[in-house]
Length: 256
Image (cartoon, rainbow, N blue to C red; front, side, top):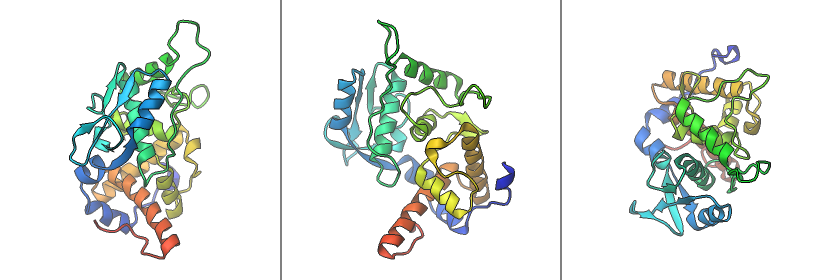
């Protein structure tokens, strides 16, 4: 653990909140409402051989309109992805889930993965597909040496936050554990609690991300819970503070 994080323990509210939650319900069943027509239209216009699906309120797979995507659906071979390249399809499903999640920071934006400088006859998305294939093969984030490599996969116009959603979905390892979601709301809560780091998620280096993962793992160990639930508390805590500022209601995430 980073020396600045020694003695930085989880708040009691975090521990109690996580202990009153279950992984299956509050992580795997964490859902987002996705506009399938919007995403599939953009996929078609960008000439991706990918089609996204979702679920209706009964859990049945649907192909049109507004539909629900669960965090548990974010995995290779998902029923909600039809694609020639499964990894690329999963990336777009992760993008749709993240942008449709009302409690996370993520605008609806279609990632442009194309390389406009490839030679004639070369697939413009070959670089992105190769980077995803490498993640799947190695099951860890790329190595980095602080001078010639960022350590992040070479996924153009994807961004750090979405990359971490994909990494979690692929069960990628880093800092001794599973990669976890990096959300601006969650990091802002950490900084508000006293974490000594730059709060801007878009500028997270791999070293800073590994430090973040080590802190989540430590808080989870102290609270006898999982890093996923700790990360979820951080996001919920931010939303509760915003609600308090707007409405004067109680700030702590409620036990539901």
